[in-house]
Amino acid sequence: MEKSPSTCLAITGVTRGLGRALCDWSVAKGHTVYGCGRSAEAVAELNAKYPAPHRFSVVDVSVDAEVTEWIAGCFASAEKPNRIVNNAALINENAPLWEVPSAEFTKLMKVNVSGVHHVIRAAVPRLIKAGGGVIVNVSSGWGRSVSPQVAPYCASKWAIEGLTQALAEELPDGLAAYAVNPGVIDTDMLRSCFGSSARASPSPKTWVTRAAPYILSLSPEQGPVSVTVP
Image (cartoon, rainbow, N blue to C red):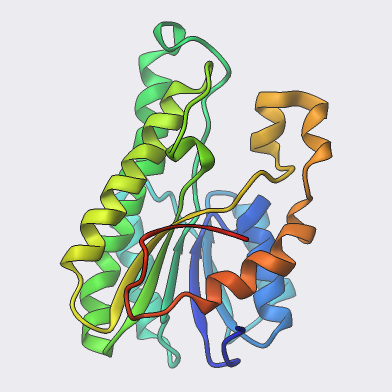
């Protein structure tokens, strides 16, 4: 069931892929979006396309201070976010785990896991003060299974599953956390793994027509934590 136009989303990794699709759909449906991404050019394009009350910022989620400043700005706005979507993520170049450079592994974990923690640490106290909200941590089928060549990515998404399970038990009434497996979508990330065969999967624009209503239907009354877009 689709929520009312009063829904306000804060989305990380908003400049491309699933984050951009969710942003475009949400704005078209009358929702307010505060988004962040690393590309200054893409953020500028979003600000030009979607002016206030929407707002987009250049943020590296692996840097705690940048995330804290962004979240503070979101909650200082007239409309407060009531749905946080931790979408930003990296994937490693296909390789056996022992051939993945340490710097690449560390960077991936800083974005995919530490970045989620940074957002949660900054947002949850404000959501509690506001009286409720929903945290959506974008997981993966590779957070519940594995494949070769992408062990760092699998590890990060398994971490998101565990982190979200624990978080859900810690949150007070009125707040809920979900680890959402979005399914298999034709994104740059999927193409980095499967090349042109990724085109057999739905595009982000097709995916979002069923995924966005589902994400917005997730209740602030905690249900099953690990869920999958139908």
